[in-house]
Length: 191
Image (cartoon, rainbow, N blue to C red):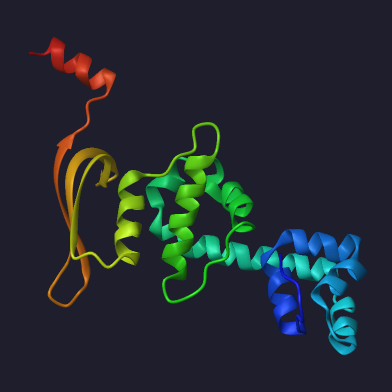
């Protein structure tokens, strides 16, 4: 919980990143601003904000974050209803990334969020492993995966992730086709 001497800029940042604070500002503004111990000038400025406009701005920021995450989790999002947008909006309220790797951190946190949900939501294991490698500092790592994406299909793969001599992350994979029931049946009947 944030408390203490919160200024207008910090308060605005908190409101844009957290729906619970926006809800509290709408329902019990005095209690929230007392908790934040805002000075009179900042308090007046914050109370003059159009709350509908603030909600639109917050949704716009989440949409921008989703746009940045999409290329980092293409296989994961492909399998979700509405390509994951609804899930991302639910997730975005609980996590706000910062720093140089914020898009990668956002994508990785979203993948982990999906794994905690009930139902058929899960992340692509290769994408999650790759994002973890990107934000880490290991020189190399290997993974045995059942969902390595290549040419719009998923493969079993032994994946090696490494950093080259310029410290640029790369990966290579030894792949083997995945057999589904239909393919396995055709394979048996034709041999």
